[in-house]
Amino acid sequence: MTSPTPSSRRDFLRYGAVLAGAVPLLGAAACSTTDPEKEKAGGGTLEKAKKEGYIQVGYANEAPYGFTTSDGKLTGEAPELAKVIFKELGINEVRGVQVEFGGLIAGVQARRFDAIAAGMFINPERCGQIAFADPEYIAKTALMVPKGNPKGLKNFDDAIKQKVKVGVMNGAAEADYAAKLGVSKGNIKGFPDPPGAYDGLKAGRCDCIALTRISLVDLLSKHKSDPFEVTPAFDVVIDGKEQSGAGGFGFRKADTDLIQAFNGELAKLKTSGRLLEILKPFGFSEAEMPGNRTAAEFCKA
Image 1 (cartoon, helix red, strand yellow):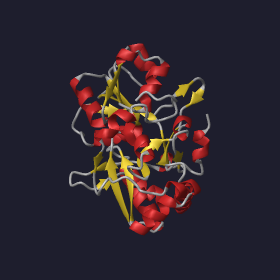
Image 2 (spheres, helix red, strand yellow):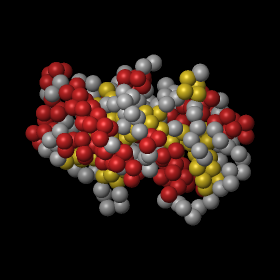
Image 3 (cartoon, helix red, strand yellow):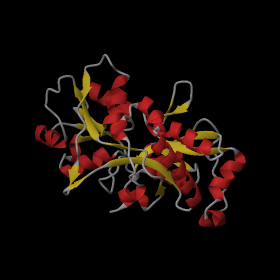
């Protein structure tokens, strides 16, 4: 997705068009009926979820961030983290509502669900729309290329020099990175999701895929016998500024008590080391742990 700011992993400009196609899974996707006046003062959503015993989260079916298994189980780094944190807050059930990534912000604003659990990158533009919890991970971009990397692609500069077609996920910040760094519009090939991008690479519709290293490693793990590889992660620098990717949960701005409570439990998991334990099965390592960095840092323009 073409993001209005370079420091995001996913763009949200197309969310209006795809929201109507949202697919509810693992529970009803009914809109929240939180009292708007209570929300203004905080307390509405958290209080309601505790009373009802469940909370609904939006996700984009992108492994390893948030996805459903073949038997319909909601999992991924964000949903599993959500289950732990919300249980500590007295909410025993997490229900998932699946939408395309571009529909997540509109979905939480429209109260189709109460939190975004999709590893969404925190950036100033998005911070103008929703509130973020502190980051649960930090990740960098990499490329998936044919085995042996015959074109020698290590970053976007190489893609520009070689004039190759770069596959991106619709809504991903990598499309924005590529465009801002000079990859021609015709050489940026959008796909609806990582599996679609993989099929495009396999069919020769693109020469590489640009996504986070974590996403690409997970994707390749499902096709171990195929002749592709993932390059080392690389820094993306635009206008002299490194583009850090910090993923976090998104909430409606009025839900201040919910955000504060969530951050409190997240901080405990970071301090105890449990955060890495929860995320490690999904390809995360100590290198992706965010330390004490906060959402406020990534919300700054």
